[in-house]
Amino acid sequence: MMIYEPAAIAARAVAASATRPATAIVHDATDARVVVFRIAPGQNVAPHTSRSTVMLSILAGSGVVSGSDGERAVHAGDLIAYEPNEMHGMHAVDEPLVLLAIIAPRPGSVE
Image (cartoon, rainbow, N blue to C red; front, side):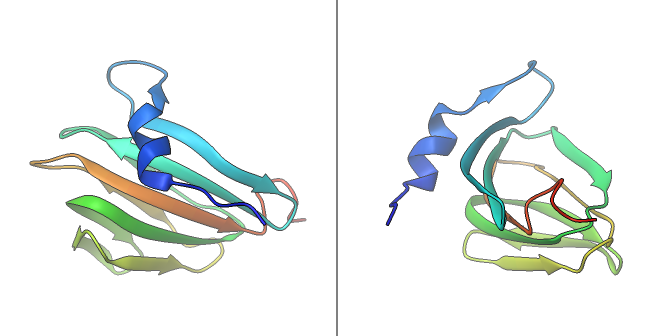
């Protein structure tokens, strides 16, 4: 058994540049990858697709997610699920958005 503290991991996450969200891999296995994102106001994760199922759990803050149904506001406590190959993205508006992404199966393991 492994126990993680996603909020603490997100607080220590590092961004590749000042314009990109901070990210950290929480767990990485063949059947799933778990990643935390700390997105500052004005930052985004551009819409993209994945061959895996993607679930986003909003840990703190609020922001906007996009999907096949358009854009929706989200807040701490929300859980968003995307089907494989569904376009998805997210951005923070007025406050930081901290989320946990569960991607199953792990990217790269899907044919």
